[in-house]
Image 1: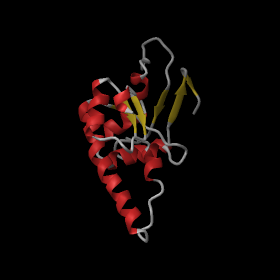
Image 2: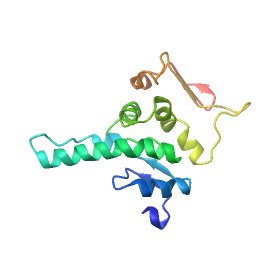
Image 3: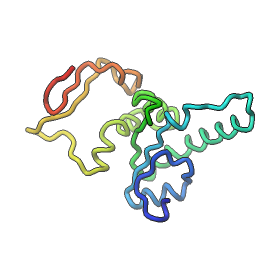
Image 4: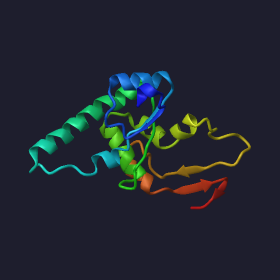
Amino acid sequence: MIEVGVDSIEHGLGLDENDLAALAERGGAWTPTLCAVTANAPSVDDPERHAQYLQLRERLATLLPLAVKLGVTVMTGTDVVGTIAREVTLLTEFGLEPTAALIAATTAARRYLGLPGLVEGKTADLVTYHDDPRDTPETLTRPAAIIARGMRIL
């Protein structure tokens, strides 16, 4: 798909280093959706499928840091089988720095779509936490405050 001009890939199980380089060159994005990709680990009772699963995990652990290094925008997705907190945890397990994983879950999509972030004098969407989610991504499941369009809703 990359060779025909696609600039945003979801899942991307078939991506390789050349695909990532091409995606980076055109300013593209990748939403690996690790929650979905890793949700159904095959049983060790099926050695062939389990080995394929482990190879996929190893390949993704190589490709994700490479994507960031090349400048591909990495974003989060869950496909209803996970949570953003779990996706951030998986991104760090697969080689992203905690800050990069949080950016993938927060501002990356806005930037990719050309939308502004916080703008002085404008209403804002903001979520705050008591603890640093870079230390424990599960913190993302327990917001201290949520501000949507400038109004506190939690």
